[in-house]
Image 1 (tube, rainbow, N blue to C red):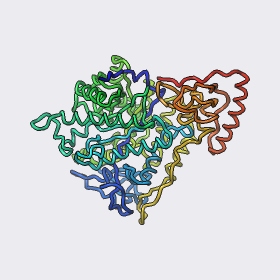
Image 2: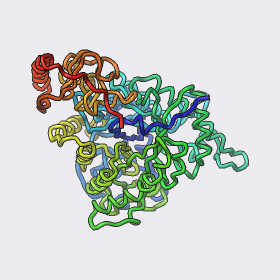
Image 3: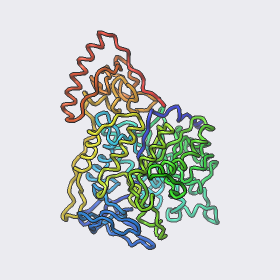
Image 4: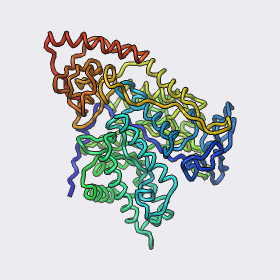
Length: 557
């Protein structure tokens, strides 16, 4: 019997901004630019009810649609994706079973903080699966194309992050409502406790999913662990399972997996705060009740709308020791499917679902609460239009704004050079699958591995993630310790001097953590690295003469 310890609040790093992605897009064998690795386009193609099925094999000059899927902006032809916008980097296979898919995974991972580049200032990436029941993890069960694509995507994120030594940045995740919506097709029945449809079938499948997710996390250094325990994440709807039922699922999963784990959810109804009794952390899911609040400006309205989603959680969490409220941030909602064929317009805010003031108002609220944990909803739900991923019409503006807002929330200095670096990486990536004709091209490779020494601050970390574990170092997260560090380098402003510092250390051994001198100048990375090495050599001499204090352990929120 595994005894769960509710201590996530004590184990949280100083900041944990999590990007949540759907990863349910495929490239089929019959794509006109050459065979892809998947049986179908997945959710790149959709149609139903009043929405005509799109054809990703064809192109359209419309790069932005609005209410009723009417075209608002024309541009260079793009693949006809099931979305009101077009991905700046083009359509792709989320399963990452080929080189092009892996390069797209690397591009996404470049948004996560590394010692040499803080990307979009995201700390971790949660990849949603539609469970593991109908994937190659359980070959005796019915197959499900989008389930397999998302399962493969999760494996690819773990593999690529492992290879880049990006420890503690991937969170196995899933849609815990999937079986309740599609259980009949999955051989589980309707799971509504009607005759022949026991809900227990879906509960058992969810239990196995969590066992599989915990095993994934334990097998990969790139999976996020706090105090040595995996953190798992799901989207859930209280309409399907009670707190008691969830408690049983979690206990059975921990017993079967033989390990404890933290469990964080995004809830479709965050007013149901009794779930804190069994969950370690809760964030609200996007609520389409914009009209229920108001404000003198869009920004003020967005702050009030965000308060309406989060206030019940903040009001209740104090009654549950060790639990955490995660803030939920979204750039808006602009549903191509019109409520999955029901012909109901779902746009937030109505008329301008990409108003940049919405994100600013959300972060205004987070500032009032001192929010340290965030879930971005979502990276790539192109279908329902809540994506942070850059698009053709808007470019990188939303992602850059997110980077700036995360930095301001966490007390980090403005960094125009970092904003430009982020934009350049996306605008230079191109589109392997495009409308130019001919075979699919090849996108540039994205280097995730930081230099072995010099300006990188070790194998993990943010701008302050140095060999001495200084300040909010790095979120290498075990026991709240710093990100690099037990080796002999002097940690100055995140520059690790003599190198990687070994495992997720506490800035111990002979490393110093005095903050002397200015950070390395942005710009050319080779020049910055050289200046950093020179500066650190001089500072080491000064420290040895002055008797510098040993490095501090990384802080835990």
